[in-house]
Image 1 (cartoon, rainbow, N blue to C red):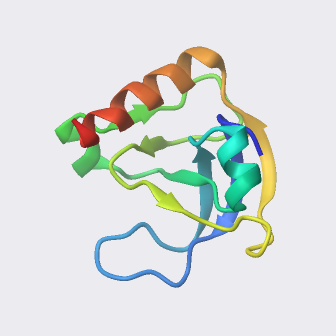
Image 2 (cartoon, rainbow, N blue to C red):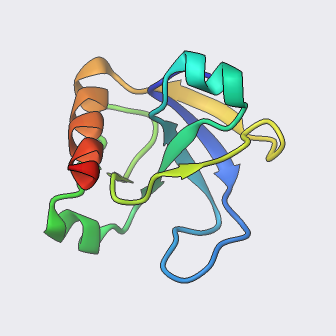
Length: 108
């Protein structure tokens, strides 16, 4: 699993305001981290995302198979293999760079 890979996965169980259901996610952690932990850090992708967009934490997916926006405000570690995730595509470098730039701001 590489940074920028998009997978379809079931995010349940969830609680509260967490994105839920069967949806695409993008891996943002490094390949080395993913290999060592088997739990890559992901961001959910949604066709909604108005709240995250308003706050500046969403990146729109344009020119990709996957549609919607990446919710850069909801990082989560998931065992994608145990959840039977299916790879869909890899994000183009320019979109991945935007995603990582927005995601890092929540830690500053």
